[in-house]
View 1 (tube, rainbow, N blue to C red):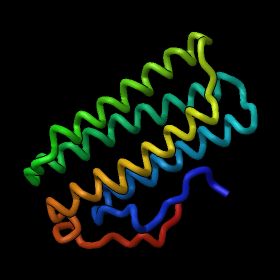
View 2 (cartoon, rainbow, N blue to C red; view 1 turned 135 degrees about the vertical axis):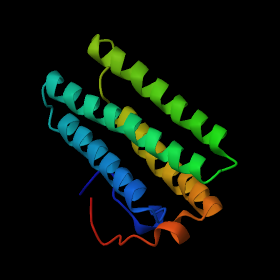
View 3 (spheres, rainbow, N blue to C red; view 1 turned 180 degrees about the vertical axis):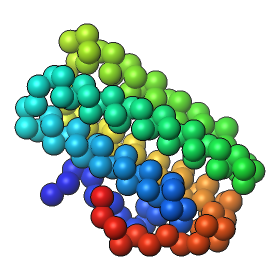
View 4 (cartoon, helix red, strand yellow; view 1 turned 120 degrees about the horizontal axis):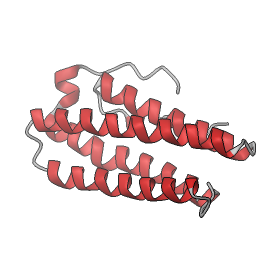
Length: 144
């Protein structure tokens, strides 16, 4: 059973953004699986790097989309993104320096932040900008 499961309720109705979200869910699951299996630090570091890089790419895409649709809450949305990136970058630096481990608390934070951000902030932005109406409803039958 995956640590984070995709749920159709998380769909924002935009195939690219939904695809990004599914990919982020899969990276969090991959990181969790590696941690649970006691994989070598280097392997965990590589997965963490992939998660961070893809998160940055996704945030840029999402922010450009919300900006193009003139989303009134964009600045607050960007602030949420920056706060997460700062926390994860700080954690990553501590992990690489040997000062921190990937723990259940870290994984729970990542899972909860991702799910809550998508379900609340991203779905709110999509509704406010009528993304689903513009992009058409994406099929969510795919699993992560």
